[in-house]
Length: 163
View 1: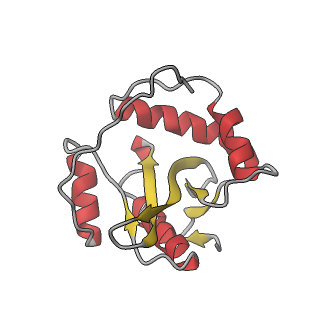
View 2: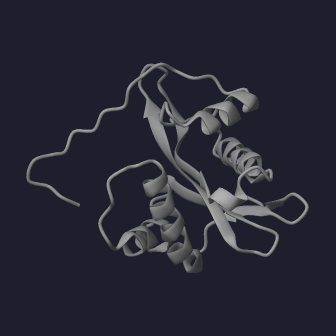
View 3: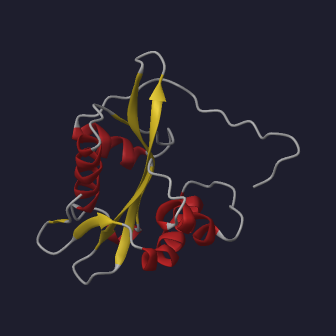
């Protein structure tokens, strides 16, 4: 995937040296969504999955940089399989921009890069979710022409396993 820019800001695939900043952004995102804190060691767990010999070829992080080159956002994606359609799609698990980076076109640039990634992977659809209280994100996604699907996401911890 090629690097994209719009008068200075840029979106590109994450590099190993970006992981500490990506984890900072992830923690901001977790706080923004009022979610539970995640365990320490996120960068150490992500590194081998993204860059190591056992790289997971289905995982991608795209990062957004401001005109000064500072990372201010990210989109995390993975391929998933839709049984009802018998095909893969790109699941955008997270999209986040730091508060000061919003409203400057970087969200649109990130979404364009996610769509380009799906196209490069020959995947015809991108799916994601956002909390129902996040009205700014909902307006943004609606402006992009995305359609919402009425579903509720559940999470069930597996007894005896904590990772």
